[in-house]
Length: 89
Image 1 (cartoon, rainbow, N blue to C red):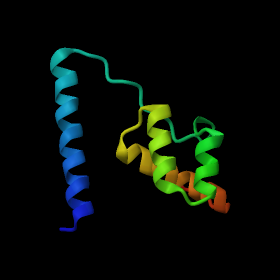
Image 2 (cartoon, rainbow, N blue to C red):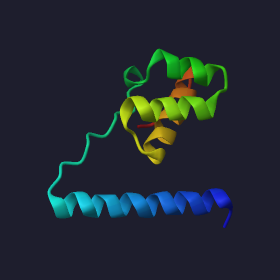
Image 3 (spheres, helix red, strand yellow):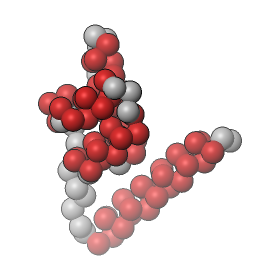
Image 4 (cartoon, rainbow, N blue to C red):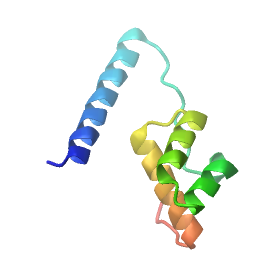
């Protein structure tokens, strides 16, 4: 397993634990950000165009509260949109 795979597995484990805590305490889970390109700020779009992926991801998470997997999915979709591709979603 690569270091990235190890980190992804760790993040998934932590997200599962957080979900259990939310359910156990009755606390409402924060709303999930949509993958709608309108939820992505012009600043994030600009960073993606300039291939500043790490900065774009951090800014997107800061703006939306998205977790790592949600951020990666949203930015992958943005990248496809910027290239003129369409997803089946």
